[in-house]
Length: 141
Image 1: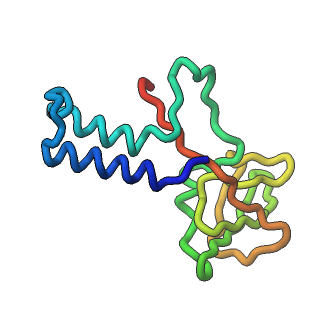
Image 2: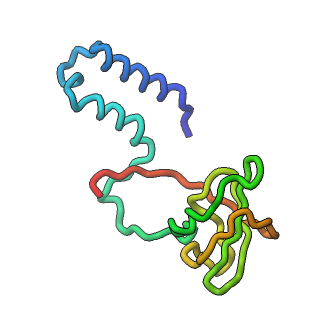
């Protein structure tokens, strides 16, 4: 884990140098250089080489995009609750503070089994919560 201050300071310095043409190396002020600087600071924190990818498959913790669209906004300050109806008719409660990308799932279920989201449905125990995730950038796909 790294602190952000040094990386932010470096990015600001690089942007300022490029903007002010304070860089003496001609290759660093070419038209394609500024996007390269932006890319290195915005999309390089979590990087994966394409040749390290052997398989891509849907996450069992991800709700289908059309179900995600059914989740309403906050049901109370800083909390979003909803129920998911599964393909066998059972309903389960889900809740999150902010992240709706991935959720813990009841035993024996995956996100692709959700057939309907009932936004704002009062929670019953247990409440399945969001799962942590990160974005990994890959060039060449």
